[in-house]
Structures are given as C-alpha cells and as structure tokens.
Image (cartoon, rainbow, N blue to C red; front, side, top):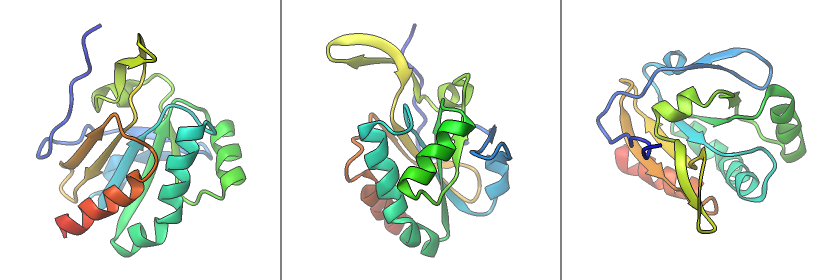
Length: 159
C-alpha cells in the first residue's frame, strides 16, 4: 500500500458525515462559516489518545472563546466513545469512522512504522478547517502531549 496522501493548507477539506457518540450524524458542512479542529486518533482510552483528548478538553474554553469547535474521530463505536467521554469528562463530540474512509481522505490512515514494523492504521493527525471549508493547518504523526496547546497557538496566528 502506498503512503497516504497528505493534505496541505489551502486545499479543500474532504466533506464527511459521521455518527457521534450518541448516534447523531455530524457533518463538516454543519460548521460552514466557522473554524473547526478535526483530530484523528487511534483508539479511545489508550495512553496517548487519553492524554490528547484530555488536553483538548482542558483547553476547550479557549477553543470556544476563539469560536472553534473540536471534533475527535477514531474507528471506535458509540458505546466506547460514551464510556471514554464519561470516564474523562470530555465535553466535545467524538465521531466514529469505522471503515476509515474519512481518515483515508485526510491522509490519517495508512502505512505507519511502529517499533520498527510497518503496519496499517490510524495516523494521529489534526486539521484546522477554516470557515470556507479549506484546510488552514495540517499536522501528521502528532505527539499527543502538548499538541492541543500547539493547535491553540496556530489558531492565534490565524486570527
């Protein structure tokens, strides 16, 4: 399998509609005219994913003040998302991309190297999608710890 394509700033963000933790459909189009942070992560309640989610949650007020919605996307289903949100007090939506189609469209699913082995899986990635539906920032192979603050800093630069 070829490496996933990577989105660049200025490209249109691939549209999507995915179910949230309660089974309600959430579309990127729902946020037209606003900025949204879309981040892809491998699995609920694993160490790195928990760190990343909790740091986005800890900074949620700052994201909201900036008029930005945060959406987390993983392959996990609604029940796991509900448990993860309840366990850690997460206040932003978690969406399910069970077939990895949206992840693949964003370049967040494909070959990656883990402990020297090449595997197929979710590539921890984050995107700022602007009010016009274009990618304003893209990060691939994200280090979970401290990433939410980096996204906030980028949002401040974007104005």
